Image 1: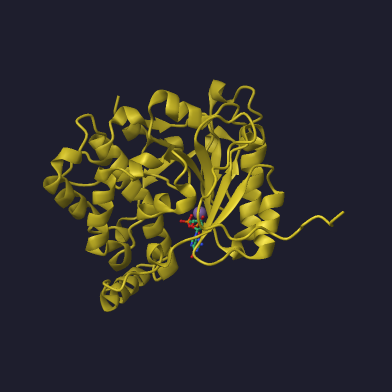
Image 2: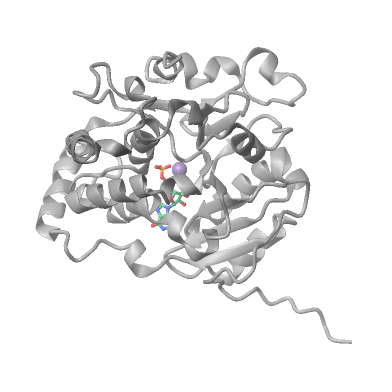
Length: 335
Ligand code: GDP
Ligand code: MN
């Protein structure tokens, strides 16, 4: 007999098979995790939460993405943390790094301006790469091509209540394209010209704006000004086909051509949120009020009967929902 092969798998770059759920999951869906090798501890603790609260029962595959190769130890420890299939993918160079056509002098001035304002990630170029990748490229990755739905996971997050049902089924069965748990206002200094670009886009392409959109969640004056509300994108359970749609592709290309991911620090959260709120019917958005989720410093904690039977380990009084920064009331007022 041969000794068991304990070597880690090759870095997978092309999806030549579709990992199926190894549990009760029936949706065409995956958990997606962008991470750095240095984040292994936070990755494992996030995985433990997702597996314990949800995935040990449903068995959805995990896809890990990185702009550099994952190290062997990272891959081994991650695979030990789940009984579901795991794939590791490398991000194509041009989907990650600052494009050559970006004026580096202007980008540097933007970073320095933001640094002077003490803004978080002010002069951080990798952070900008990450925001642009999450805005315009993750859904093009070969490893995600087999899938319709994804659940985004980040290092150092927690799920604070059991998730006894399949949120992917919920999206599919209710025709939803975007699910969130936390919504609040963006730092204006990171997106000073984003809204002007959005307005330019929708004037040029009015056909992409849904007749039943959620503009009043984004603006108190019908779109003249942006109130900075967005869905926090570190949690997303959503439909990849929405990002792959013509409307969103055109929108991303248009925003990208403005250079604001580098001249400013446009986040994938406002970019995703503005698109979902304008190009989709508002009925296709979903607030996962029953999912307890924490990404410090903010959390959403289910209250009242939503906690029943879920072994919740969070305090609803600490939930961001009814705090002044929250945009939940504006979202709920859509109906
Ligand atoms: P924050 O939540 O906005 O403070 O940003 P994070 O540091 O959590 O980054 C968001 C996500 O992108 C996380 O999943 C990180 O692991 C990932 N990320 C951020 N920067 C990089 C990077 O330079 N390379 C890779 N591979 N992942 C990154
Ligand atoms: Mn994070």
